[in-house]
Image (tube, rainbow, N blue to C red):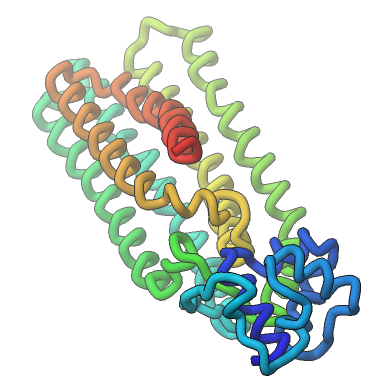
Length: 326
């Protein structure tokens, strides 16, 4: 076994990525990659440091005939998936392709109650000749139809990205040049990402203005206030569209670089959070529908979604904190 193979084996045994080893050696990732591919060899100073870092002798590192036994405990081979340049480019392409439709599906979910809210308010005024049951029926059909379209989009996008799911949960290694390519594309997208996030956040903040306008003009007119709330939801949907669009693309870079929410540490808690997320939103949906049908207060029950959205990051943070302490 030559030096390059030994470095790969020792690094994997310690569960380090090339970036992590490079940080400890005070070199670039490219240097580590060249050592492991045999394109270059570390100098004597680096050999000594590698020896101390891995707990092996310099003889073991330099002499091919020596085995690892007697220097450190023999480690089992760790099967780590290698992500090729083509696979990384394919993933980034699919991720960008699905980002717009994913953002649009989220937009549909947010605006789905609008028709129901407006019709419910209209049915309360006998001048419009719309019965309460008729309003509820048409409104629910519209709501369910919009959510069904959104779910269909989510499923379709999920099928397109299914082959790359391992990037979210499993440990992997990237082939030479992949990280550099991803970092370059991320830098090119960074300005667009920042502008999109700022736009989305500002739109969401401004979305409350229609409600203030409604209160100033005529807060006693229920239909008018529902229209203002509906406009608020529409504006929120537009703001969230920008946030989701840019976040999906950005998360693609983080998945390949194993950074942010997709770092090795956070992947360990990923399965737990997936289960919690499913239970959380199913519960929120059940509470929203039960409360709305029992109270018939469709004009304000949408606040349940806002509360669920605000509280979810808190729950996620607590669970991640518990996971890290464990």
